[in-house]
Each structure stands twice: as C-alpha cells, then as structure tokens.
Amino acid sequence: MWVDAPVDLRVEVTPAWPFRLGGGSADGLLRRRGAALQRLLHVGEAPVLVGIVQPAADCVVFAARSSCPDAAREGVRRMRVATGVDDDLRPFYERFRDDPLIGRAVRANPGLRIRRKPDPWEALLAAVTEQLIEFDRALIIQRRLIAKLGRRCGETGMRDAPTPKALADAAPAELESFDLAARRALALRRAAREIAAGRVDLHDHETAWRRLGAIPEIGSWTLEQLALRGQGRFDRVAAGDLGFLKLVGAITMGNPRARAEEAEVREFFAPYGRWQGLAGDHLVHAAGRGLLGSIPTSAPPARDRGPRRGGTRWSAPAARSAGA
Image (cartoon, rainbow, N blue to C red; front, side):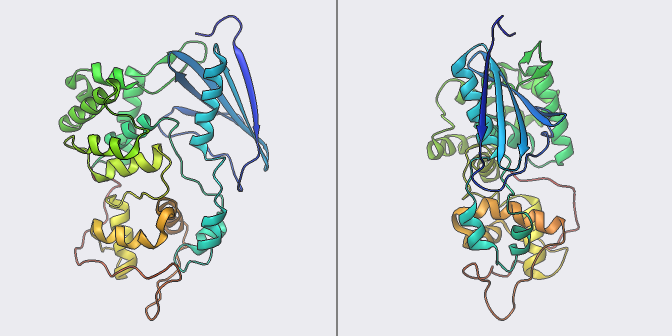
C-alpha cells in the first residue's frame, strides 16, 4: 500500500534510436491503460508503480509512484532497460541494413528492440515455464504463478512477479498444480533457492550461467533466454528454440519442413557477432511478414560468410515450443 504522501517521479527520455512504445506483456504484468503502459514493481519491499507514455516520437515519459525516492528511481531505471529506450541500434542498422537475409526487415522496422524483463529473475522464471511446451500453455502457467504467488498492491489492483523466495518456499506439488511439469517444478524451485540464498547473482553473468547450468532441466536454451531477455546480452541467441530449428532448416535447405540442428543454428547466426540476439528477432519478424531475403547460391552473404547447409532431419510443423 502507498503511504499518505507518496513520491512522484517523472523522467523524460529522448530515445537513442527510433523508438515506438509497444503493448502490454502476454503474462499480464505490463498492462496497457489507454495511451500508457503500467507496471507494478518492487524494489526490496517498496512497491513502485511505473507508467510509460510516448507523447512524441522523440520523447518517452516514465512516471513512477512510490513511498521511497530511491525505489522510484530504480523502478524507472528497470523499465528503461526493459523497454530498450536507451539502446543505440545505429551500429546494427548500418552493418545489416543491406544484409541479403534480414536487410529488408531491418530497413522496414529499424526500431525493433529486444523485449526484456525488468529483472533477470523474471526472465529465468519465464524461460523455465516455457520449456518444451506450447507458448500459450506456458502463458497460462505464468499467469497462475503470478496470481497465486505474486505480490499485489491493493491500491492499483496489479501484481508483481513472484520473488525467488516465494518460489523457493513453495512445495513442488503446489508448483505442479499450476501445470508445471514435475522436473521443471523442481528445477525452478532449486534455482529460486540458489538466488534467494545469495549463492547465484543473476547480474554476474558467467558465474550465474555456470551455477544454474548445473541444475538438471536448465540447459542452454534457458540460459540464453535469460541472457537475452533478462541480462541485456545482444550476443546470445536461443539456438535450441524449435522456431529457429525449423526456420533455419527451411532457409538453408529450401524446404519448409526441414529442421536444422542446434549447432547449425549457432553457425547460422555466428556472422552476426555481438548482435546475434537482435538478428534472431529480426529473422522472426521478417519470416512473419514476408520480408525474408534470399541466400545467394554462388556467393556468400554480405554479413561475413554464408550459413552452412543444414542437416537432413525432417519434421512436420508443430506448435511453438522450445528446448531446455
């Protein structure tokens, strides 16, 4: 609940690169209210309500309300990271606007940004719930977790994501009751315990990946989703994602039913270097809107070199899901 005299903080930001305020999040944590987006966060025990509006193309306004000035400032900082408003994507645009594969998509939507979570823990929580199942089903699990274990602010009627401690204290059977598979419930609870106890710092990237990777059911896909969606790492792409396995297979083999191997997906994106994650989002955007270019057969693409032809495994199209 708010104190009688809450702190109101307003910050106007000039985007570093063309920016368009998106919509709310599928898990319901970030909500659209008229022309504004709203998100309830907690900084320690202090609730912070952050509103975001874009009155002009070159102006994005973040307004935070909290009982604590420091919490209000931290809430704004987190949402600036989550929206990517400060990301300068000019180097990516200048290097890949003429790429033979994603160039059309880059030119059509130069402001496309990685949609991040305001806290790395939220990215990890989402990734574990999305393992090996259809995305829509994963969203149902996430909404149930938020409704049952998330922190609520009575004045706003909104909820924040569950804390690591809330997941660590939950019984595996309770997590399974949300339709989370038993092994993933155990993995999520173990990861939450490591974070809640301070043994894993999600801001210490390499150490966190190593410790989390030792937990059964937490593999490369989950860690790469954490890196890209929670830690701001443009150089990471979730190569084991079924969508990429199918899309890269179809592109490199010229057959819509082809499926590449994870290693082949990594090789495919390697020429994009430190921008692999953003290139992956542009590839998905391009495929969905018919903006994919072609891979030359007689000369390598202008990126650096062409992707190696994929393997020979075939599969019928399937619902969206991902690896561990």
